[in-house]
Length: 198
Image (cartoon, rainbow, N blue to C red; front, side, top):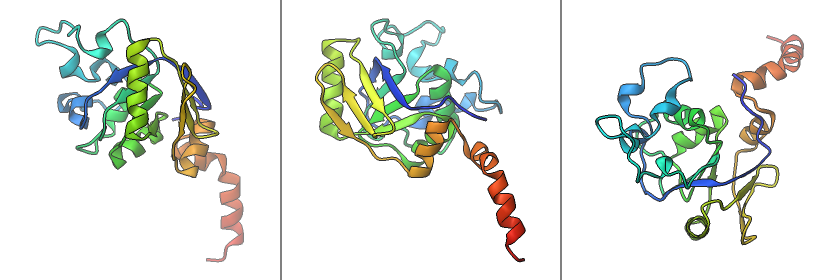
């Protein structure tokens, strides 16, 4: 399944300054029965977003009308816990295209890259700068430039570089998942198979 191409994203952000957010908090286990990658966004952070009577918890950042955008700014060790790929599906399905943190669990990072969500790991100091900028102006714009691998706070002009696997970067730029990538080079695969002795 192809995803939106990711080149440069300029967006406001939703701050979630909580450390050690695990995948069960991102998408509770009771919502993992579906097999298609749709509808998970409704239950992103379900137990944090809703009361038991299904009313919204107005104090939770995703329910706060001051915050919006395609960037989620999480605390250190975001996406820890179980390896469920549904957590990345929920982030994507909700509308986020980038998650920023000072540290990601490896499996969650890879799951995000597989579904078109860019995980941007920054230093703890730069993460604090982002939170401070959002606190001063909830419409603060972040500029995430994948080709140059930089993230910039537009208001201050401060930026930082981030790392990404070159294969995953190429897939993000083209909107490919792993199958799309293989389909894109199927002629080369065929040529290799034809010219390689068994």
